[in-house]
Image 1 (tube, chains in turn cyan, red):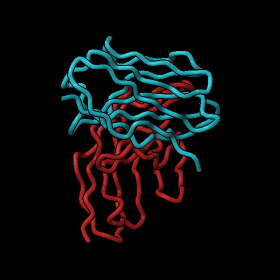
Image 2: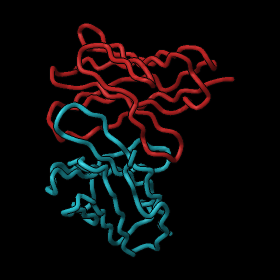
Image 3: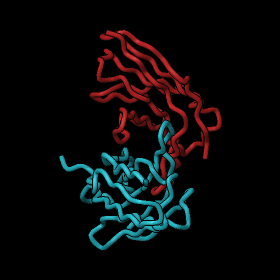
Length: 113
Length: 111
């Protein structure tokens, strides 16, 4: 079965550069969530989208922005990167009608040097 | 968001059952109880979820207390591949509610 696809798997950027992470949800899933997981930490919710509209916002820095496109894929844009942004970034998708679990992608490991 | 409390770590032997407890005394009537697990450097993996009744699937069973203030994830026969961090999460009844991860239980499985 198709899973949540994230790209790239690994990304190395220098401080003050920008990065774009992509997420392709499972077909017919209408909600996408972004999470950040620092070293040794639990996943922290950043932002979510339902039917291409932002539905909820967590502890996402102002330097970060995200959107969901007409094909339901989502992108997380990160500017003015800092060393502390180095983390695993996960995307998850779910279907809102009915009661379902959430499917996570394998993540993008961002390293800021 | 309602919170959950889990032991920091647990240990099990291979091929034995494992019972992972979770307390959620402030659960509301519309909160679903979700369980996910995460292996190192991998994305969280859905295990099981339920509302009021006990649930079974191919991975595990979920036993929910009658007052819903606690639940137990049951792995019937632990394998080495079950070694992971297990998260018990309450998901609100709203359709688009995010999952808020707390500090899960690190399960070690001994051969």
